Length: 245
Ligand code: PGA
Image (tube, rainbow, N blue to C red; front, side, top):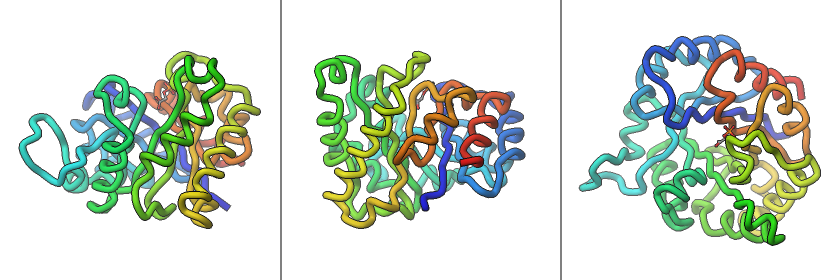
């Protein structure tokens, strides 16, 4: 039985004035699910103090331990700030920063080496889905960006169709179940029995109204939530929906 994980991704939103939302979300986390918020780097240290059972993470990490990489943040720095996890390979970074599968894999490995848990994102574009290539694209991303020695102790995956992110559109329940099943089958090839323990989150326009049906799909072990994670009013109902499953 895989315990549900609901993770929020604040993207480039959030100032110190918003720490009250972190506190309100933290106060509502039930004991039966894992809940996390991946915040801008600038909020991590202060959020950790307010977080309680809510895990605080980052949205990216550099693959190198240290060095001449102006503006970047290492895994050790995230640990030092109190983060417990990080997202790697979000489609916005794959697109905007041209991150490759190889680089995403290296980021996941660097994060794990420093003691962070990792949420690895994969997902197809609308063109790829319309061309009938969604499963092929996503399972290839899994194979190429999965860190070495992947284990459910520290790794979760997130399937996020690019066309569902921030658009209010979601795949059908059948499409979600089919893709999560395909990802799990690829994981069996790659890591054998550990595939049954690895959590696969769904992400893309998850909200309080659709969370129960999306989280109830076969092989869906949680959610990665963008816009609806910014306030306790919107995010807590998603965490509660996961807790009821
Ligand atoms: P969204 O974003 O929930 O706003 O669609 C999800 C994500 O990008 O992780």
